[in-house]
Image 1 (cartoon, rainbow, N blue to C red):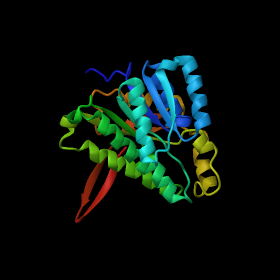
Image 2 (cartoon, rainbow, N blue to C red):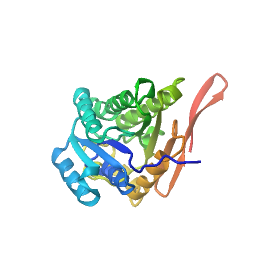
Image 3 (spheres, one colour):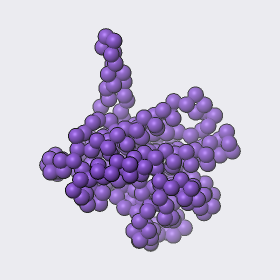
Length: 267
């Protein structure tokens, strides 16, 4: 079966100045795609653009400063990407933060930011409104599938992303709209988000750190998994879990027990 070819496709990536977003941007460019990425960190974003442009060509990568919680500014920056590249084929909602003591901020960035990005991309892509079709990949987490005492707020946003994305994938007008939706669920990746956590960002941080010793997911494995997902001939509804040393597609099922139902991930 033919795969979705990344070459010459335009990817819009949020939170692309560092960490997972930067890794995915470089992966797209290495596969001869084009990238427009945004971040709230302007200096880091400009530095990333300069470095990526030096390797892959300035014509293929652009950076725009934007806050995913500001829908108007988000839309304006997306429009700029369309003006520069003519289209966006793949939307990657990756921007995220970990601050358990600031739940409103975490929900705004992680969940609302992904919802805004998806809606903005849908409006551009949908075939029934004159678009070309496209794909939306929302970056969730291992904690979008399971619960954790360390990250209850973060986990709630990531489970929200999973539910939101899977719900969109069930649209009865999917073929007419022409947009596919999927989620990526990485385990802990050794990025600045993880390495620079402050007291209160993660509950019981010392205990969690012990669990992750020598078990961080390597960026190159995550990037490879992302392209396995986005290159599927039919990506819609897929959820790919990526852990240290393994990756697997996941489905959630309802298990009936008498008068009750239990949601169980098929890992």
